[in-house]
Amino acid sequence: MVISIASDHAGFALRKIVVEHLGKLGHTVVEGGATAGDVPYSYVLAGQKVAKDILEGKAERGIVICGTGIGISMVANKFPGIRCALCTNEYMARMSRQHNDANVLSMGARVVGSSLALGIVDAYLNEPFDGGRHQTRVNDMKEQEKELFK
Image (cartoon, rainbow, N blue to C red; front, side, top):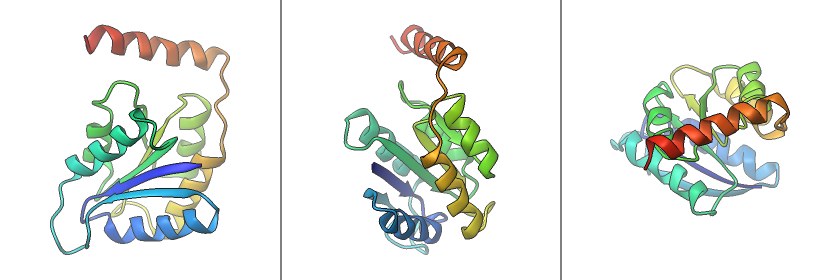
């Protein structure tokens, strides 16, 4: 799977750990965002990069990381067609895929440790979308986007 991942400076160290993990799993990674953990980089730019990569077909799924995961998830969710889920545990990651067909995962580097983060990533990547009654709700979100993003 092709995965776009980006972070601000606060998420830089965790992003590097996740990128290495994704490589070991055989995924293709499109990486962007901060170039160091001690050089300020806007979570807005990082979130935009991943959202655009998905919408332009450069990646199938995305992962965004900032200090809390909140700001960067808000940015990603401003794009029509992006369903970014801020997850702090593996259950949330599984449910974001099963019920919401999330195409972007958000995490907070100051909220989850690296071991938990890798578990969240694995849950997010391995869980299929259930469809069925959940597809109806995802379709409702898509219709809302059409109305709001004219």
